[in-house]
Image (cartoon, rainbow, N blue to C red; front, side):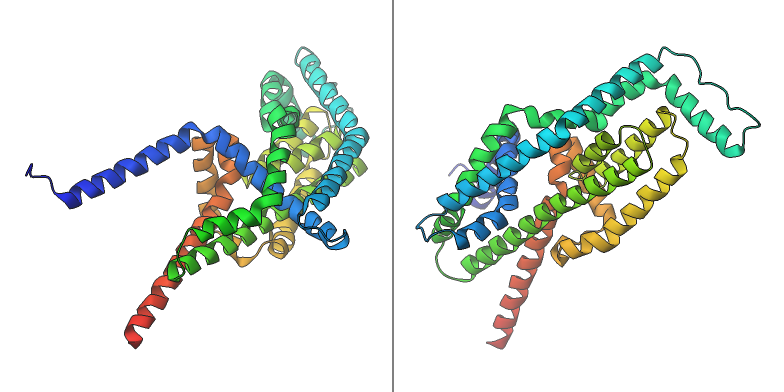
Length: 350
C-alpha cells in the first residue's frame, strides 16, 4: 500500500543487521580478543590434557587431567621465571641504562692502526646508533622489551587460563550443542566439516607457533651466547616472543638484535646477519613445513597484506590473528566450493 518493495526491504534489513553485528564486534573487540586468546591457549594445552586423561583413573569428566595439566604448566612457568626471568630483567635494565648513559657520551675511541673498509662501515653504523640512541630507547620497548611486561597483566595471567579451563572442560559439549541446533542434512554436514577443519587448523597453528618460538629461544640464546653478543638472553627472549607475530615479528627481532649489537660495540655484525638469514631459511623451508599442514599454505603477499591490515584494524592483536583468520577464510571458501560442486554433480546425475 505504501509502495514498499518487500524484497528490497528484506535486503535493507539484512544489510542493517550485518552492519549492526559488525559494529557490536568492533565495540567488544577487547573482550573478543581475550576469549580468542583463551581458546588458542586451550589448543596449546589440549595434547597434554589428552595424554594425562589416558593415564589417570577413569572419570566422567576431564577435570582431574585438567588440574594436573595446569599444575605442570604453573610449575614450568615458575621454574622458567626463576631460571631465566631474573637474568632477562637484569639485562633489560642494564641495556636501558646503557642507552641513556651512552646517549650523553662522546664518540667511541678511535681504532688503532689503519682502519679497514669493514672497520669504517662498522664504525659509521655504531656512530649513527650512538647519535640516535634516544630514538632507540623509545624504539626497543615497542619492538620487544615492552612485550616482556605483557605477562604481568592481570587479564593474561588470571582470566585467560580460567577461560581456557572451561574451553578444555566443556568444549566438546558446546560443539555438540551448537551442531544440535541444526537439522540433519547437507548444511549440518558442511558446518560439521568446517568445524573439524578449523579445529585441526587452529591446533596445528598454535602448536607450530609454540615450537617455533622455543626453537628460536634455544638457537638464538646459544649462538648469541657462544659468540659473546651482549644481552644475548634478552635478545633471544625478544625474538622468541616476536615469533608469534607473523613476518613482521621476526623482522623486528632481527633489526633489534643488529641495533643492540651495533650499539654495544660488537664488531661481527656480518656474522649475526648471516646467522639470522640461515636460521630464517631453516625455519621457513625445513621446520615450518613439517609443523603446518597444507591448509595453512598462504601466499607471502597475502600474509603481508593480512598482517598490515590486521595491524591497522586491531594493532598487535590484529596482526597476531591475521594469519589464522585468512587460513580459516581459505578453508571456508574451499569447503563451500566443494559443497557447490557436489550439489552440481548430484543435480546433473538426476
